[in-house]
Amino acid sequence: MNIYETDKLLAEYLLFHFAQPEEILPWEFGPREALDYPVRVANHFSEGQVARGLDVGCAVGRSSYEMSRSCEEVIGIDFSHAFVAAAEEMKSGSRTIPRLEEAHLNTELTVTLPEGLETSRCHFEQGDAMNLRADLGTFDRVLAANLICRLPEPQKFLDRLPELVNPGGEVVLATPCTWLEEFTPPGNWPTGSTVEWLKEKLGKDFELLEEVNEPFLIRETARKFQWTVALVTKWKRR
Image (tube, rainbow, N blue to C red; front, side, top):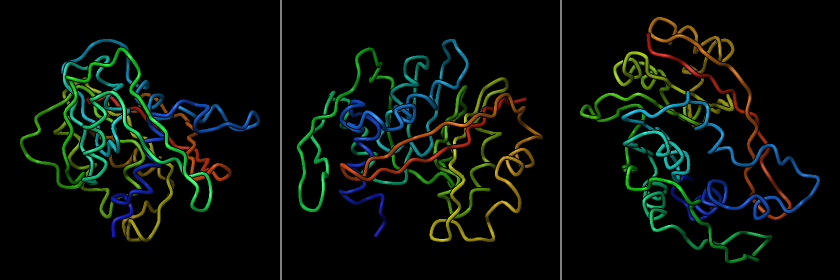
């Protein structure tokens, strides 16, 4: 079974995307700079309003909603049917989820969308990042957060980017570079570092504008968290 269709992971990601900081991390000594990751990665785009944005691997949709602040239209695409349905459901403003504490103990928690988001601008659909539908059109901004190292053939997604992005448009790629055989065959991993691989694959069509590190935190239980650092690169279509 695809882990991204399970109730457990769905609840974890809704918490990751939409819960308040104290609902995720109650400990004063925890890594608070790693919270609000879906917001932070979307904020790497340049300032100003644009026509169209695309969020590939949108999960439950928070980054897509954040992109609606500056994009007249945003399409969020994810391979998980459960994630796409949850992202669409969040248009209502809230959803109640079980937050796992330990063992069989759960706390019922309502996660909410922040105010000021243009939810009517967002459209969500199930799709395959390696085989995006041909009639998507072109975009001024494309975000792919924590996606490429979960694809069996990430090269297929990178190859599609030039035709998806308008000249002068921007791409933000975020990846923890956790290349795992259960997601990507080793033959499709970068032979060197991920960032050098991206430069090689994208350099002909895109200019690298920014390379930074962004931490993120996923809560599994009240006492167990995933703390990870993503490589974030920002590119401009030549």
